[in-house]
Length: 185
Image 1: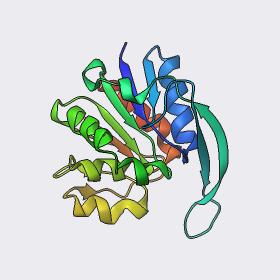
Image 2: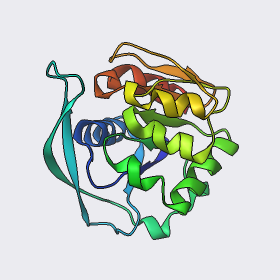
Image 3: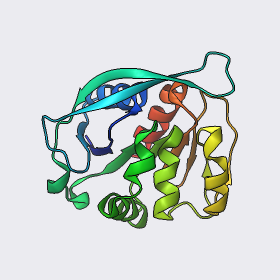
Image 4: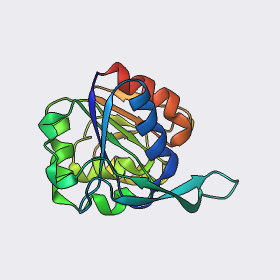
């Protein structure tokens, strides 16, 4: 079974954090959920994004999520795959040099990476998607294109694999995204 690193943070999208975390563990994989400046046992706040007919998603306070590993202790070489959830967290996580270094390590070593929704902001900041076909939440389209990738507008329940990278527009794509991600293990 694979050892998966999940980089998450405050106001990550609740489903995009919790569902893959639990599903990957239910499949028998080890998943370490980490956040910069936090340690195992610390909590992060999540947000719930929903599609209710407005021009963009609505945002509500979600659950508290307990981290199960300490970011400062992470060695990327110890992991087989990387999962990047969306929500608000990628906005500020992309400013952390170690987060970017970890993402580059996975990309440069052709290890599986999954990104959903605004997780693409982390991929663009790391500069690892040039020439790739990428899906993300539609609001991330300009960033994806500026990073040299081809943005794919998929249905909200769709996902795409390009090499070692699986991407999807939002949490309704979990079944497709997780199936493709695990196939890369």
